[in-house]
View 1 (tube, helix red, strand yellow):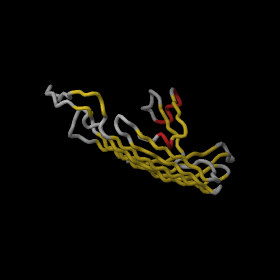
View 2 (spheres, helix red, strand yellow):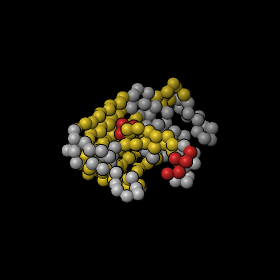
View 3 (cartoon, helix red, strand yellow):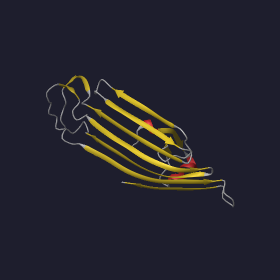
View 4 (cartoon, one colour):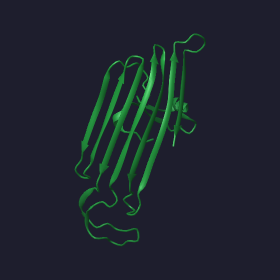
Length: 184
């Protein structure tokens, strides 16, 4: 699942029986990226982070921002990012086609440019024993496989999540958690 590293709060690596929480096909383990797109605790301040990136070999340009705010009862989260690279610059070489035909010498790796953008909006109602929230996010990436010059791959994901938790309730359960997701 694609996600920008700026929004990841922590990463869990689960192996063994704990991985079964994520389905029967997770026998090799699970890497779970935890984000705060659905805020899980009360916020009563404004906070954020900004990241800018520049790279030389592929002329990378990118950046992202995360903003979170709340009034103690309602919490909101917003993030956005974008990244663009040009063709990768390498030492002078002569690319070879699949049929063995040698192309003109170049310093660029063909079809290695990429463009990615995405973002999310989320909000939660928080209370002493838990939260209930909703978030929507999108991820759009266009890139080419360097083995094929005339192909562009467009990977697009749209995701909506509803999550909640009610802790310290009376009765046989210590907590009730709900998580509904739709990904296209």
